[in-house]
Image (cartoon, rainbow, N blue to C red; front, side, top):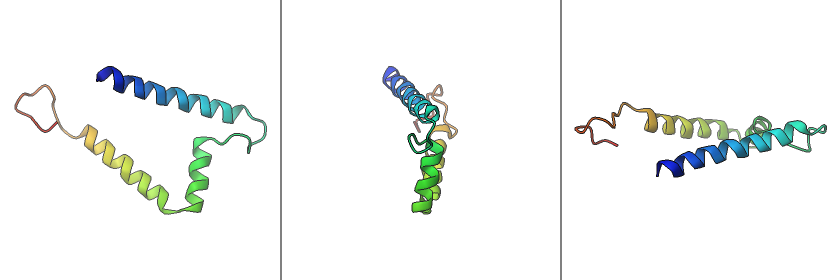
Length: 78
């Protein structure tokens, strides 16, 4: 399962790099949209998006990085 999660993370990084590289290589700004521009335009269209993305990312970080020690056999929270 570790390999699958690692592959998924690497695939996301590669796809992000390809899309950002494509968007930045265009001379016409409308030919390719970067992630930051997409989020800006989506937030203009629907303002609660920024708050919801922050809540989801914050919840994910708290869930993943909360104080849990996988090496401790007495700690069965994970």
